[in-house]
Length: 264
Image 1 (cartoon, rainbow, N blue to C red):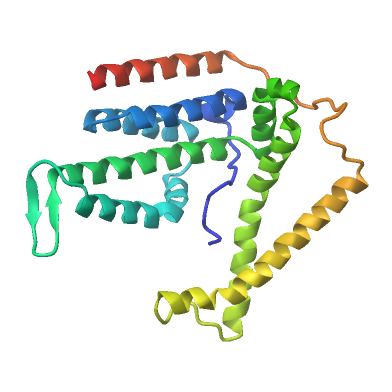
Image 2 (cartoon, rainbow, N blue to C red; image 1 turned 60 degrees about the vertical axis):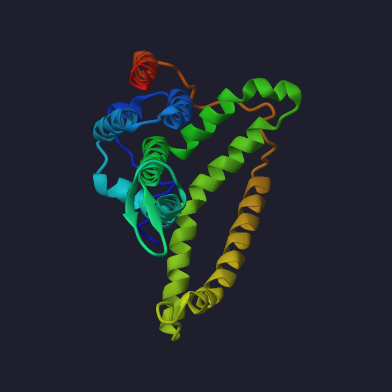
């Protein structure tokens, strides 16, 4: 668990790191929408090639992206099995007494798996190259017009920042509690799935207690420092768009044109 890379920020000076966080946030959301518009192998190959180029430009090790994929491997595997054996259509590829694999089922299996991988890698690329503070500022800046409707934008941005900040901390805390229970004779590997799930109860209870304690300490620290939300606050760091962000818009337009041509 200590090697899971979700929510971690990796400092660097790459081109992706230097982009404005608002531009990166908007680009990732738009990219995720484009992924769902892909409908055949050429489109997914095009998006995979672009994603690998973005990974290369970020100068982040491929191993870290693979660690980011680990938590969803079970979901990908379950989805693959679900589509492979339950989706019908096209020619019959494998005929067995208890199941039949169709061409459409294999096609959907490949497409759904690639879609999951693209979404996770691009979301991970955003968190790897953008600090939690910059993500919070970008989120608050983009939603600022909604403050006129009474939406507590600053509080939402703060909640997101705290959640991203404490994901790695909770993973580390879980690993420490698990090792402490193993030192006391706990067994997390043997037995069936139900038994192994029950063995994690001594881990979850201390983890929840620790999380509530951290939340209370954080709230007391914020009150002691006179925190009153975004009212009357100024920004130490102002966000500014640069020429790199203009190129990001051009790249997104190129992606849209490429997918449109491939769909035709």
